[in-house]
Length: 131
Image (cartoon, rainbow, N blue to C red; front, top):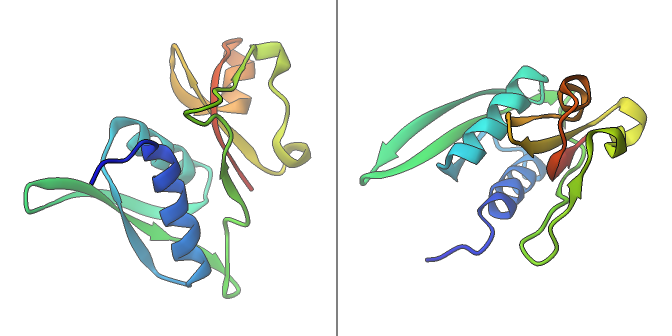
């Protein structure tokens, strides 16, 4: 099985698991996916994640977070796609949902939120938005 968009698959697995009210889901391991999960945990969108290996295939097990029986993540979507990459300068990075959500951006200094990218004055590829 080959994936043309690993991040898109990763986000779709999280979105579908939350809609189905699963407590956890398993996603393929990559450094970018791990960095995105680290940000989601720091921002309070997920409970925890850990790396596991089954049949010598590394994966990440994500523990999803709910509040009053509804998912904490209302919307998680890919912004920059393989067919149409979206890059933004630091001064052009907007706030997601008027500051209620976050953009996750891949910069030369690593994967970070839109707030940190503006603070460090770095731009990059806007990977996804989370609300």
